[in-house]
Length: 172
Image (cartoon, rainbow, N blue to C red; front, side, top):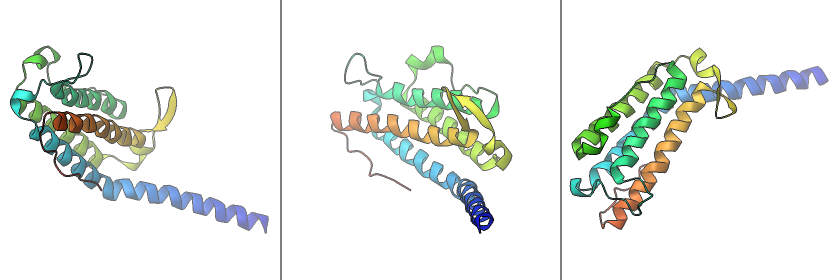
């Protein structure tokens, strides 16, 4: 009897892991695409002349928020691929126009989308150490989305502080 219960528990646990893996393989690319489309809509909403707006001296500007997202994508995807991709030259960042920032954001987000679409199950299940925590490489993809949502939310506040209508929310 106990053997059956243990076997059933192990079967259920394996099924849960398989379900999570299937979710990533079948649905996460679509989730990422919707997220990056929403980010692009938020980034496009701010008029070009307000791209350097920041609510306080210590805060990142609207432009810097988006470049920070690209920087984070560079750093975190290196944890997945072992290769750190630069999406722009840091020394040129202060002179970027709105169109250049949008192109950088597109490039960085499409790079992640390509990694999502081409990730193998074995790669996703690889365990790495990040920030003192042991996690799978799949978790890095979720961290990428969470980080972008955090800074996109700050940009939404910046839009409202400038009287710019924010794009309607896009979720799952």
